[in-house]
Every structure is written in C-alpha cells, then in structure tokens.
Image (cartoon, rainbow, N blue to C red; front, side, top):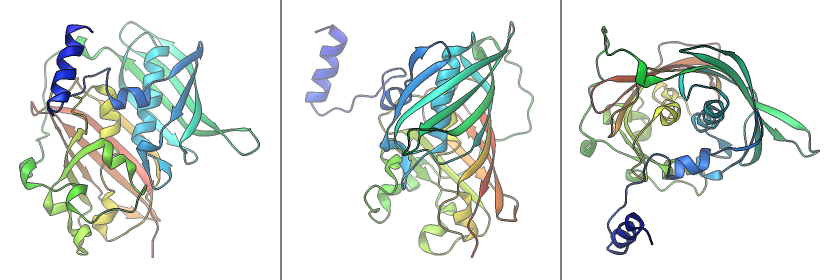
Length: 294
C-alpha cells in the first residue's frame, strides 16, 4: 500500500475525519463524465443530489461544466448560462458538446444533457452556452464596491441537522453539503418569514473537499429558495441560470448571499454572490425561477 494510502487508512481506523481532496471526492465522482466519442459523454446522475425527486440544478450545471472543460482547450468556466427545459431524474444521461469558437484567452462551447423517456426517446433536459479560459492568467487588479456579506460565525448559524427530521429522500442533497444558515434568514423555518427575500449561508461540501470553479457552479444553487422568506412554499424550479466565475477560490468555507428584489407574474429572480475565505468575490449569478402562488 502506498505511504499516503497507509496514512489515510490509519487516520480512518483511529476515527479521525479525512478531508477529501479536489479530484478525489464524492462531488468529483458524481460529476465525472465518460467520453464515448469526441463531443459525447455518458454519466449516471445519482440520487444523492436530488431535492424531492428532481436532480439539483447546480449539480447538473457542474456536470455540463465538467464535460465542456474536457471538450474545450481551456479548463475554467468564466461564464455559463443554462436553460432548464425539463426536470432531470436520477439515472443514465448523455451530454453532447459543440465547440463554437476557440481563441487564445477564451473558448466558447455549448452543451446539452439528454435522458430517455419510457419509449427510449431522448428528452433534452438542460442546454448551456459557456465561455472558458484560464483563471490563473487573470491580472490581480481589483476595483470593486462589493463588500462581503455580514452574518454570524459558523458556530452561531444553523443547518438542516438542527431542524426537524426530514422525510426520507425529500432532500438527499443536504447530506452532501455543509450548510450553516444565517439565523436572520431562517424565519420561514419557524413559521415567521421575514418577507425580505434573502438567504445567506456558510457553504461547504460534507466531505471537506475545498472549492474549485466547478463547485462554485453548485454553490450558487444549493441554498433554500429565497421564496421561502417571502412566505411561499413548495418547489421553485429554475428556468434560467447564469453564473460568472471571477477567480479560483481560496481553501476554506464559502459564504453565499442570495437576494430577490422582484416577484411578479409567478416568476422571481435570485441574485447570488459567493465569497471565499480570503474575502474575495469568487462567483456571481442571476437566476430566473418559477414560483407557485396561492
């Protein structure tokens, strides 16, 4: 047994938690795609990233993001826009990619994820258009008016484990995450929503894996919907989601802040910011989602 594996086995036997690493974690295994032929990838969407029976949109975006990172000459997503066409279910899926343009600093591609109906016909679930580059080549110059969100330390925030026991299978994704929500955005859980349409949380992966650009695609869509703090309940399906990755995150937990300013016609927007442990704004997103009124 290699020395590193021996050390890990010893720690595990001693009851010491072993932190997963980028490239060797549950998230990496569950977003891994297998290239069938150039531009075509197979994956089995696992039930571990579902809410009720639907696969989480951020996880799906990471799957497509990984396939595009393989298909394009650049590895890092800079901007990725996704349209969610039909709800994805756990099980086999195929991702088809197409290189739109390649350049020195940016390359652009599109990808779609398909599953199969009861008659074996392909059904498109999600379609994305993205531009990729190399985050490590970006200049260090930052001029911003953005400031990190202010909320209590992690030990004074609350996660799913602090609430009532959920119905089995209702939100499997929470077992894969480490969420600690700002108490001031938890009124909905106590039957007293604030009406402000805000959600803030510390965010990490349950196995301790540090973050990379792909996990940022998950982070922007992993918190409870802001609709809950507007006094609404039920599923809030994503219609469209655009993510901008600004820099490679530093090791440590992320802070995610999401805000909704306008609900009209049964749709709302969610603007998210993701900050790393070095107080850098590492990702931003805007999402359009449908809500169930009444």
